[in-house]
Image 1 (cartoon, rainbow over the protein chains, first blue to last red):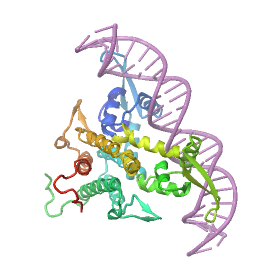
Image 2: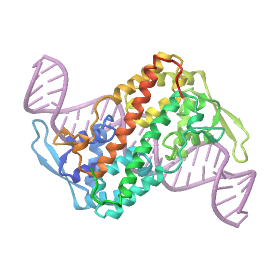
Image 3: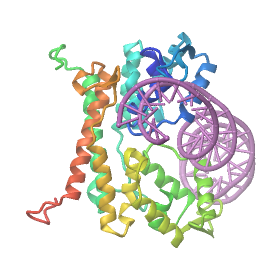
Image 4: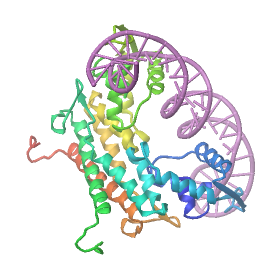
Length: 176
Length: 176
DNA sequence: ACTAACATGTAATCTGTTACATGATTGA
DNA sequence: TCAATCATGTAACAGATTACATGTTAGT
């Protein structure tokens, strides 16, 4: 996320954190102890450079710039997204947020295809004596709620992915 | 999750892990290094007791039993669910999965009400120069995908929560 | 005078991941 | 014989959270 937001332009840590909080769960706080050490690691890895600037009243700002190496690192990580980055919704949404930065269209499609493949595998959250339970077998009202939500978001995302991956052949330029 | 699954009956670590993997992301592996230390912490906290049993071929099983204290701990944590447990979808779904275990109906409704309250607050994932962007202002196709999915699941979950919280007054027993 | 927002950091603690370590049984 | 499943653990490392620490400016 840090690399992604910095690819859009330089930012300092404080602004960065607010953007991250918005995207990543829009309610999940990112503490100082998370962001500043993370920045330090990326600077050490030559992905970022810092430039001092006078702050908007307050301490000196350290404006962070993505290096060429940082940009490559980001593109590689997005292009190679797999495993948890595909299966965990929160992680995948972060990948999606910056996927445009992957230059090759085929690479971007491959990422979407991996996600679609995952979403089309049958899911079961609950089981009884080892056997997976189907939605209509679940008595617990709260567990039914989990399924209702999961099924709705799964369906919506799959529809969107299909739209992206199999563009309507009949009339090529028919986006609203 | 450990306390929750053990509230349904005794299990040993290995079974527990499989149940956890199913519920929690159904694709997120839970490693030995996560589950066994976690069990150890709970035993130390008097939430669990262990009983040795011969394994199904292989090492000795340690069957885990929830103590009375563990059951109270679980009920308290579910009842008091707030913050990340309400805002993070993955965490909230775990709360939902075991919410039936909270004895008082009013407490259970309060948890659902907090989630609904959160879901009804306006969301924005992206911003430009500090101003939040609305769905139709987002050009990036992948970011639109994030919104499409988020809006669909938000809507479905809200509908379900409303159904739970404001039961249809006209005919009380009208579930399909 | 106090609080909120701006701005960056460190230290202690806890938790998760990965890899290592052990060992039995079942089926190909 | 080899892999998979069953079954439980530890150790090294990385990362997140919390609390601590500092200091300015703007508004009430």
